[in-house]
Image 1 (cartoon, rainbow, N blue to C red):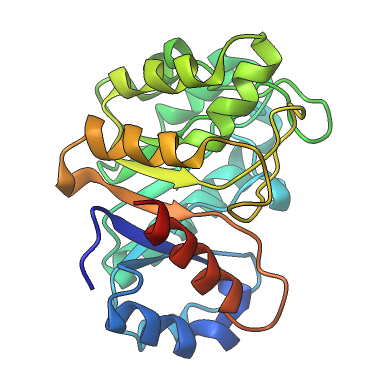
Image 2: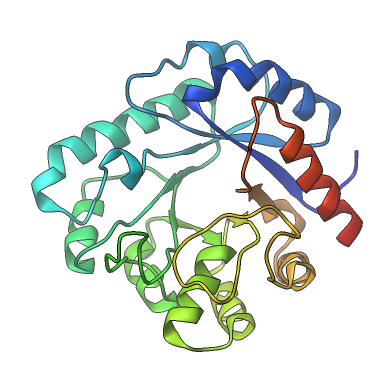
Length: 252
C-alpha cells in the first residue's frame, strides 16, 4: 500500500498480546513500522520474534523518568540504557527521548552522558498534565537540547499545546519547528481550548489535521516522513488504529 509518508503504529511493551495483529498490519503495508515503548518489568521477548521495523520510545515520565531531575540520575540512566539495548536488539532506527520537566540546564547536563546517534529529542507542551513546567516546548529549547549531537522528533500535538499556552497561532508555531530539521513525527487530534497534553482520535478534536499532514509532506523529504499516530486505543484490538489511518488516507 503506497502512502505519502511512513505511518507508525504505537505499542507499549505491555501490549505483547497485540504484536501478532500489529505485525500483520505492517506486513500488509497499512503501517510501516512499530513504535515501541519499553515498560519497566516487561520483556522484549515477544517482539524479538517479529521481522518488522521498530522505533523505540524511551521510557517516559509516566514511569518516573525525568532527565532534568539530578536526584533521578541513576534511575534515568538505567531506564534509558535499557531502551537503547532494546533498540540494539530490535534494530531500531531511532530512540525517542523526552527532555522532562524542571530546569533545562539539568536536562542538558544529563544529555552529556548519552552518546548515541539514534537518539531524537521530542518537543513537549509548555505545561505538563500535573501543571509542571516542561522542557523543550520551543524551537529555541529544542536547539539547545539536541545541539549537533541528537536528532529531533517533532510532536505536532505538543507544539499546538505549547502555542495555546503561549497564546500564539498554532499553525504559525508548527511552521517554526520545521526549521529544526525533524527526523520523524508524532501526530494526534486534540482541542485548541486545552493547553494540557491529550491524544484524541482523528475527527474527535478540532485541529486542522489536513494542514498538519500537508505541512509534513510539503516540508520534509519523503525519507524523513515517519509519522507515528499517537491516537487512543479503547479496546483490546487495533481496530481504532485502523480507523485512524483510514481517516488520514481519506484526507490525503
